[in-house]
Image (cartoon, rainbow, N blue to C red; front, side, top):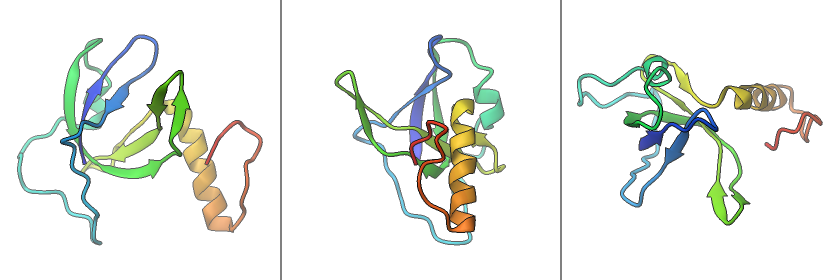
Length: 117
């Protein structure tokens, strides 16, 4: 998936999917396209200046349900790049790990931690 990221001081980052954004299904084994040859690693994205637009390519490994907050659609997502680095809001990592744990153990429901999965 290709996307554009804008950093704000009020939150870690915001991912904006435009109407021209293309999301393709993946097939195992996951392979990244050969071009472009150099993409900024996700760990470098987080070091970029405030209010800077950056294009990224990654695989969506977690997508939270769509919410409507103050008249705006909102959804948390975790992306992975070709080096297996994840790009996400750190506070969503706990929710993602809880979901993985529930899927592995076969448990369901909300753990009471405020995570919606």
